[in-house]
Image (cartoon, rainbow over all chains, first blue to last red; front, side, top):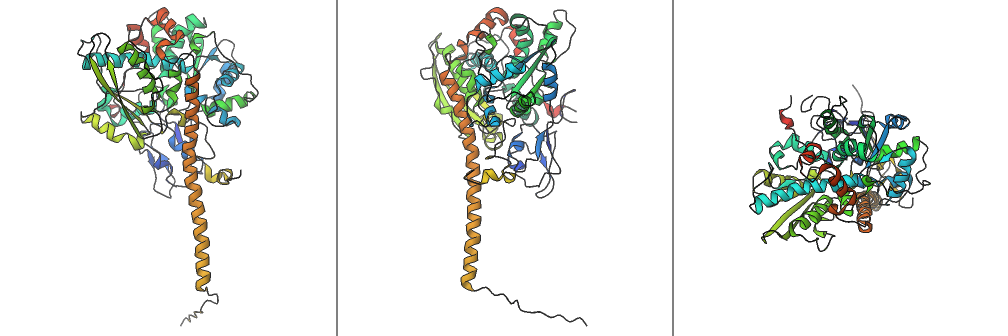
Length: 419
Length: 103
């Protein structure tokens, strides 16, 4: 197949021919025109064009689209193996959605219960919110270095990419750039996504300093709201931990993150293991440093979250003071394109600069004007956050499918106001 | 030769009845469209409810900026040094691929 590296997964999303009614709903949500088939005919997905975001899946009115990678049984098997340490890396937006699968209201913050249920299943915890904070440190430092070089005229210590800097947390967006806008690859932050940082850190620092186990006996499971993450973990370049240990005399090969379970997959895992989510006792992991996270880490799940978190840190590093009002409203909400500018006074030189930022969510509807400006070299911005799914990860392709939003033609409950 | 015999339909619809039927059909279509718009709005409601849950998590957090995360500060002290250090570059950064050039 074209456009794939060796050993990468070439297909994640699939349309069931028997259930497809050819209604074209999926096409209206697909950001990369990967769905083929005329109106009324059975549709199919072209994997070479697909970015695996799963928006078609959660929005199909007939429930005819599914993701093809099911590792629930494998993970249950690994949890039963005493020699393995199975680490769950929980994305921010899983904790506000997993409850829906067990009858809780959408948006219920279920962090404690989620920790409790994961521990009962036998997982160790590495909160991806920690990794989100970590991403801010790496990606934010990269942005700060670019600001110091391009805006304040300081000589650069490292080789730097270009401004505007794009975020690189969203695997759907990264694949979109690699397929459809390779000319802006130098603008993409070189920082890995939080999940991939978590994997590399878990199998190095986590293995030796936190859990005292051999990295080759570790299984890192991403608990993600996203189907595109299932593709991301298969990318061959994400085996940095194994590479690190090879330089130190090990011969083992393994990926940084072994597998990904979506929010829906995790709910199935709990059901298969007879864990009653509603009765599980809430738990914290207070003494585990890799489960510590800041508010900035958790807001990564929303559109604008990465930007807000990055501004909190960039403002502090450049001006030497904390951002006066932490809730940075201009980047919040569901408006298609959100813009803001923020004035910073460099603590070192006293120079004043205005940083212009933009937030895009929903590649299909909102990306084009911003991307065209950057490609033409006319972009007014310095930092641009892009999330593929409308609303950000809270509305990801791996999240619970709700009777209100999706599969509703087959679900009368959704249509009847009194149920 | 074939013989075709057309018979006028026995059922006739008066103007009043026709208007009544149009009214009923219109009402059904209108309710359906109303329900469908509702559903689309509800989809946004779900996104908003989940987003609110996340902002709640931020507000109740003791530490609200990434650079103040104590576990992360320890990690840099004990392991990676500082952001963008050679080890951090090796483990936490990546390169991208121009997929238009892959076979």
